[in-house]
Length: 395
Image (cartoon, rainbow, N blue to C red; front, side, top):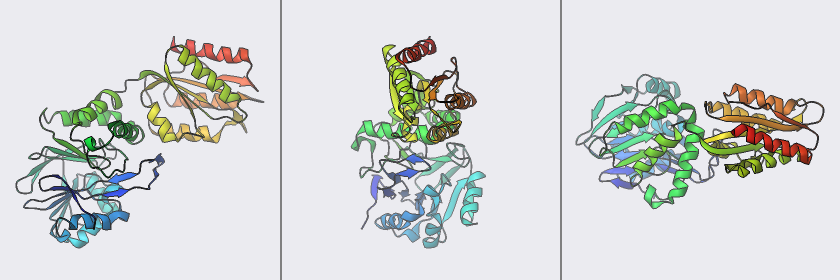
């Protein structure tokens, strides 16, 4: 029988582990996914968030290891998205008298739209809910990363149930940050932010500000809806969100992204990479054929120089590069300090690199240099000129 994991007295993790999931909305989940739900035993038995519907039996089995699920009095839905809410109808079936709380108005509208009217109670920022010895307070965090998002703060236990904020797509048998490899945990937290939360940087910063506003001694734990629970490194994840992820500050880093047909564009990409390194700038070369776009965006997050290359095919850039740029633009990468550079080879007309240039411009990049388009196979002189473009770019 699956068992709940106690995280504090009378508070249990009752979620599910999706060890084999490798994709989430176009995001490569190479380490799987955890769907976290939390059961709190008090005068009113409370469940915070649920799981994806395919894991409803796992959720019920873990709850049953602690208490009869029919005794659940309250369900708090911090976020309507299905990976958090699809098991709500199942909980209502086994606990027909439970009250279901969600944010006003978007949470209630979203749950109704997904599952019909199950009799939802709405809450907003500043509202409180007593369940006996414990009192919860709610803070709405709209667009981190849906309009309905909110967090629930357990005042007595000093736990922030943060839903998607501070999460990671990371399946692990160990529930806490300090039980896992922190390099891996922080890597997964950064990748999660880069691919899920990045478009809502301002809202994420506001959410961190709200958490800081609870006071310096107000948090023992942050319990997100995905990944590990933060207990020893609460300050580290808050600092990462505040100073790196949501700050918009870019580092002196370069990312060279490309696809190639007959190695001509790759030759240019390698020359650019070498030139950045010669300037003492940390650089990464990533092929869109070999690297998943979500891994590229992890590197992209705080890089100042973004070079994108494609040869010309059928008067267009390669579809692989176009797909990456579409994914990138959806994550709202506009930043006044970020430099873009387009490059590539061509046979009849330089339309591949020129179209990349247009896409970078529409994404809000600074483009101090015109697209570098080289006819057929680049010569050593042309590769040297490409390296000179890097010097001009960082000048």
